[in-house]
Image (cartoon, rainbow, N blue to C red; front, side, top):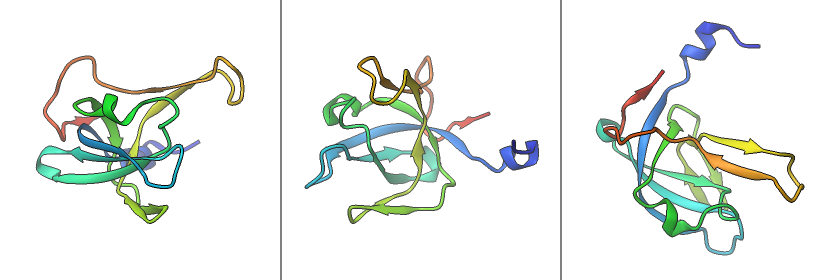
Length: 113
C-alpha cells in the first residue's frame, strides 16, 4: 500500500507515438518516440512487440508515466513507462497485454489524474 502523497508524486501524461521500431537484435522490444507536448519528445523502450506491431502504434495516444528514472535496455535509453493491462495469466493461451489509452484524442502532455 502507498499513501496518497506517494501516489501524487507519479506524473502520468497523454503521449502520442510519433515513431516506432523494433530494437535491433531483440524479439520483444520496441523503441517508441513519443510527443509529450510542452514536455517535449522522449524515447520509451517497451516489451510489447509480441502483442503490437511497431507500425500499429504510430499515431496512437497512450498513458505514460513520465517521471520514472530513465533506464537502458539493450543499449537504448527508456525515459518513461507505458501503462497496460494484463488479461489472464502469463503463459496461458488467452493471455493478453492491452494498452491504456484515452477514449478521445487529447493534446499531448495532458496530465492524467
